[in-house]
Image (cartoon, rainbow over all chains, first blue to last red; front, top):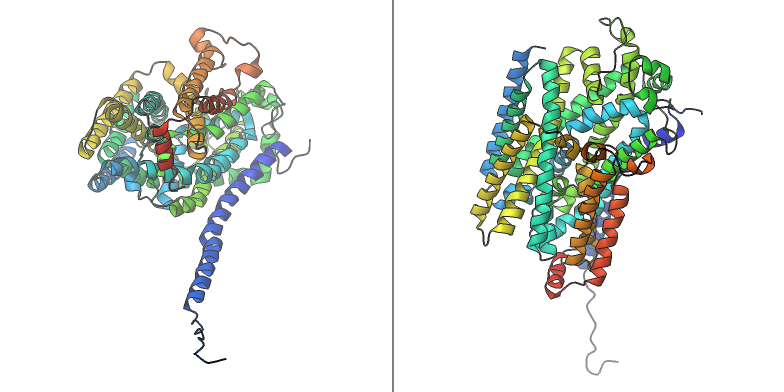
Length: 66
Length: 530
């Protein structure tokens, strides 16, 4: 059987999956710390913008006005 | 190695931990402080404490020795340790456990079960099961580390046991979980540094990852037999290949991988770490730290294990002091210490011993703490006493922990044969007994008290029965021989049958014997934050 980095395919799979699992943990951390946070921040910002937009004065019709 | 030099460092080590114990004592005002460090721990401390509790000296020395026999196929366990032991454990179990623990005001796994199903008996019985088996497991950790120090320094075994137990006992009883988790952070750093240098050292000696693995692959059974290692028969396809499907070595590897890899999900001493986190954000942040920590512990230990054989076979090539190949030292747990002693400079031997000592102390302190909490909080306070004040509760647990430490000391000084047997199935037993009730408690609102009783006791009795009557390692020592002669069955970890059985029993009996009004009330309370 051919070897990859000196290991057979099943052992190499375990080897590479272990490293990938650690990378997954790191990516999860990065996602939560930066991307998800940024998304939440953007949402918050949009909400705040909506809130801070000056409301158009509602025109009320005066008596006799057409 | 200079024993006096070593003794000075041990004294400094003990003084530092004693100081952290004192700081913990100052910070511990309530029972919640003692049990779950006031639910105030940050991500790095949580991650390091979880990792240092998870990875004991047995994992570092014992499993690297096992890898030296079964080869790199054991790396599947490293994968499960990170993917299941960290990623799944935190995301699927950690967040919910923390939230439910807060809602139920629970500080231990038995208390969560007891409060969720409105049953003090569930709490007391599960606490008792945990405490009994943890004492035996802790004794075995001390037994292993004391034997290592006896071999390396010639210090009498009894003195080693007394020193380790007293040091851990003092900072634990005085400082509670604060002291335990802070010491874990320091111990974790020592473990990281030790394993990192060891791995880099061995791979650089052998010329890098590819050449090192190729050198291991080139070791034929005949060469391995020449140094007397069981790897000659246990790794028939070579040290870097999986054993033939369903062969005896394959079944052994399968049992090791799943017994520990899945068993990690229901370990009471690890569940406490979720409860101690200050926020869900802290738990989320702990995941990358935990992943890296376990990678640098188990992945490195399992990777260098088989490579020890290359160094031992070609000893004169890698050490000028050696003229002949090194022979297998008799047991797997002596392989890595032998390689470190023979091929590394003295300063590293010293560092490595402290790393191993840290691994042993961190696991032992976590086990003492969980066992003390089980006896003090779950059995005495909730099971035997009525209406206990906060101050009294803390006092009871401190006394209970002291009793546990003392019991462990006595067992470690006169270790009966069954200690080793109990240790070998600690992880599996905890998983089969608690995984189904714990998982369903978190995710299925219809889980009932009777369902949990049957799942928990069914799993426990099945596992005990399997170990006594069938399992190839334990049955011959208890009843003379296994009742099932086919190795495919008697080498199978009870977890494979026990966990599905426990799930089935819990679900079936929850559907037949539904929750009463009180249980529904506590269920609603448990899920109010989820």
